[in-house]
Length: 77
Image (cartoon, rainbow, N blue to C red; front, side, top):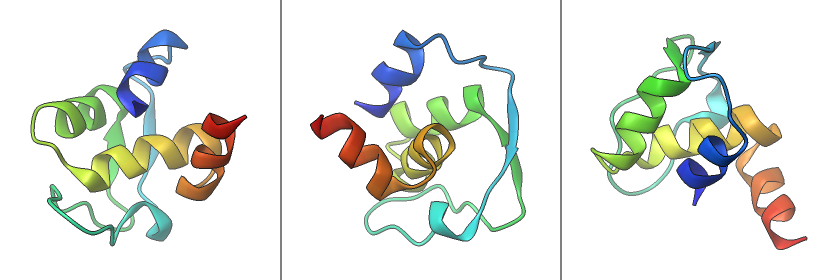
């Protein structure tokens, strides 16, 4: 769902951001994101959709809404 919303909202795929602590430490399969690491929206989409990286999906949600919890709240509206 995160990938779909990111693409639908035409988020700039080359946008760079820094991984924060709330974007890491999620359960399940991850791609091993580390706090302070930089990434692009394109890279996180690839990690979330191709590698099923829960941390990459969480990073996109945090980038878009500020946190995973805020992302869920937005989706429920």
